[in-house]
Image (cartoon, rainbow, N blue to C red; front, side, top):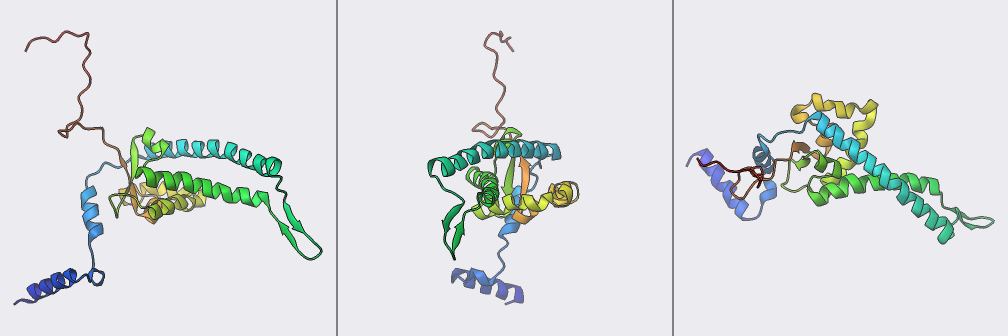
Length: 210
């Protein structure tokens, strides 16, 4: 028996025994091959989607925080000085809480929505593009969260992380590489046979005989 066959047999036997963690699993390569040839989103598609999403983030965040602060101070009568004595002082700094809430709101928008929709945000859906995982068929919650936090890294140095779209393979920005994702164009809807749905015919037009 040759060395190649012996190693192959040993590999298959151990895999059957459930010892997969001892061997390299090329699942990422298989996933990459499945994505080969996918049309990548253009820079302006991605920039437009980000602009729409950032607008929606702040447009929804500001009224939400205004309602929260009103409820805390006016309805629940929560003051910054929660407890004060001669030796102990417990203070709630609403301003710092608001800063933390911005980060949480940002992650919920760019993380939770991407995870639940498997790659879409409102902006990306409008621009017909989608975030795709290089590791799994469906984006995991951790990947989506990593990608949301990765926007902060892309904004460093004057947004140079976004400009890296033009530098790195597959037009990946910093947050793409952190989460191991790419952004592709969403294909048009197809019929059951796999062909692109034809345009609807005008019922008022007369069909000429062939």
